[in-house]
Length: 116
Image 1 (cartoon, helix red, strand yellow):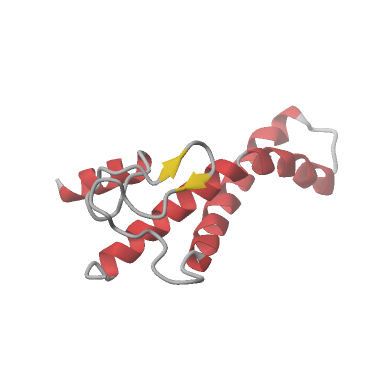
Image 2 (image 1 turned 180 degrees about the horizontal axis):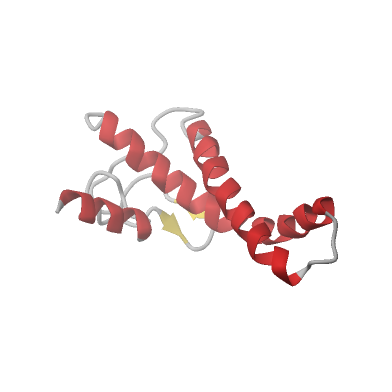
């Protein structure tokens, strides 16, 4: 049951401590702390550097999936052109990747260090 609640909180972009408070205000603005439990999201300067790795790990499979889906539609293109065709699609997903990479990073960090 705990795993299901945690995954639901990640998908709904909720606080890693209470699993209820919203992490973002609007589309790109992140709260400083959880409005429900007061958990501070950015624990220290540079805290979200790890989220860049999460974002990369999410973007590469997404990019490869886009290229695989485009391949049958764009048969006449070279491999380089095919790879280039997938880039705008991934760039359009960047704001969503930004949000989810930060939320995933906070939950991952919370699982290993819940006390702070």
